[in-house]
Length: 141
Image 1 (cartoon, rainbow, N blue to C red):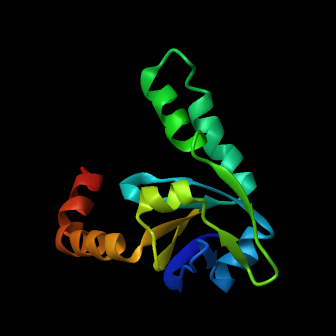
Image 2 (cartoon, rainbow, N blue to C red):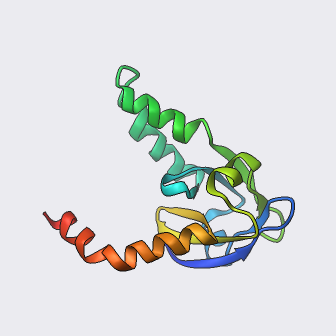
Image 3 (cartoon, helix red, strand yellow):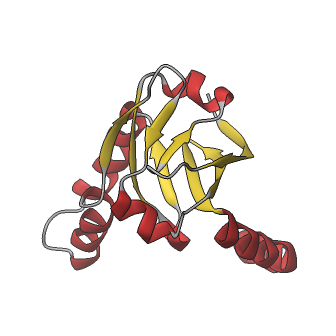
């Protein structure tokens, strides 16, 4: 199944957040959370995580960019389990990286879910709204 849509949720004082129900059905009881790009976090099923890891691990240790990507994604990855209400704790390290405090945006992006701070998402969404035509043109070139 593909993750689509976006949902806002509250982060409690312990860093606990509830996964939107539509996403939770696909994720099951566990997921992997790690740093993503543009200061967002990435939440992914264990099965899809293996595919992500193999994309970089197959590049070999002799390539600097492959090692850097391994460190960025794998070095900050945590396995999380959901409680009976579909909640989990975003590790403090990752909350700080993504500047997530009181509200988080869950964004479905195909095989993964991105988790953004509300402020960062609004900034990025404004950027997208202003530049999507040019970005689309670059993709088609």
